[in-house]
Length: 348
Image 1 (cartoon, rainbow, N blue to C red):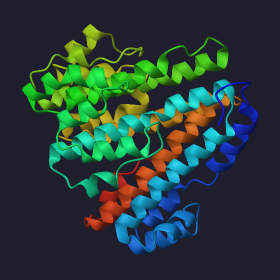
Image 2: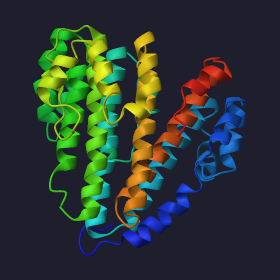
Image 3: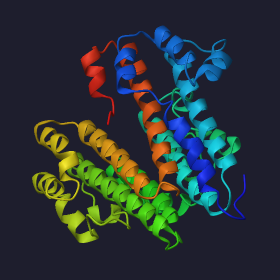
Image 4: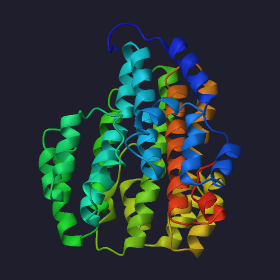
């Protein structure tokens, strides 16, 4: 791994495109929905997850085996991408992969809030970011959300979480803490990107990601009923909202839905927005934003095929594969029907 010297996007993109071709297809997801956990594990053993299934099979079984294998494979794939990368390309990819540090922080916070067992939280962690095993262990050993804030005080998340903690205590909802983590991640992600044309295209992708994150956060606030100032949870860097617009729309769900429907994302999110108006769940909307971001990343990757964007697009697609397989396995364990499980999947 090297963050100095010249970049090597041609080599890395070629290897990533080969990996992209090995991701599961929509038809394979539908096959998996008709299998039980043991059959899913056997199916995975015959694909790119073979090493992980074999290594973990003696210690775990059922859904636990599937989840541990998924997370280990994900981390390995991303570590290999970093090992292939050099110079500026390495730096941009490493910076984006810190999203998994943010994921792990939010997962630990949610686990403590819900009173979950440590083992149940640990299986959801993805060790593909910058945090080392010692930091992860300290997070898992924290006995309170305040303890998590203390563990992170020397990271980019510490000051943001400390500022948000009072709002969390007053409201008893996790939105202030989760949003603080997101804002800290995106602020670092957008810093000093550079101004060449491929990097500007990558910045356009990040802008869309922030827009959709702000939309999701605004909808969560609108649905939560908590007495929180929406402007405090605005993430800088998007085009869809400014701070005042977000604050106004987050107080009126109908107006917020209409605003997003009339935006540049309306065509991709339309069906989910209509469902959102009729249902009490944000799941369909969040799945639609994930699918829209995947499609946009693929589109930009064709404009500048030798750049960081196709690599980031693969990271998103691999992450989505893992989430889809996990959703199928958990759905089977919970006794959901095949149709209900399919509704949990993000398929583009």
